[in-house]
Length: 203
Length: 120
Image (cartoon, rainbow over all chains, first blue to last red; front, side, top):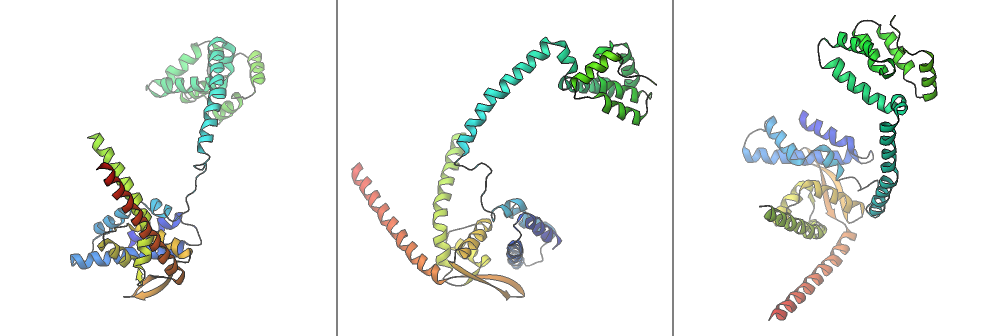
């Protein structure tokens, strides 16, 4: 019984509010009729497994409810070929040149590489994964590595995290610094870099 | 046996499409006597037109909203059941659909006879 109620509840979730009581009542009557028939055929009360079988046979609640709903698509079948064409056009004329320019800049322009957040994020993630998670003496190693690496190439977030894991700065300091250092404004970053070369100061 | 499966799938699709076209007619005709969903399904199954309830119940709702069926909730064996019956409009539509159905049958017969003669 409880299983049936939960099933019906799940179906009800997807139904439009005006009709859901009605539809679910009908479904409930149908399920119970089926159970009655099965019971009289087998000559015994149905176990939970049997009821589960019956419900599984009907299908998932979402699929059951979906049949009662009008067929709607975001991009209708009539318009779909046009949509696909425009999508192809957009990919070709926008994403491909954009990606090409980005790759060229990243490869050829070192300052772009240093300042651009996308690269920094990927580099940070890489260093974070390999330097701070994979090995157990990680924190000390990572801190050492950071300290020995040239300042300009130190990734900021990874650095912060390494210092945190090494126990050198508190968590709130860490958060404050990460927020402060991760700047979306390239000018500000360049200015700060020019001002003080070491982005992280160990307290 | 991929080719076999593809052919089977195609055949199954076409069969379903054919049956789907006849479903409304079958349901309207069967509901000349009053029934509720479960017995209707059983009756159709006995006559060789098995429909699963996921298709049948939405169809019944749609036909009712279109005015071809009337339904009422009634208690039978301590259970509330929804009984469907064909309405007056439904009877008219059924008659027209039957005429259409027989017309299609005749056309198909002619086409089949023609092609048989063609091969001879």
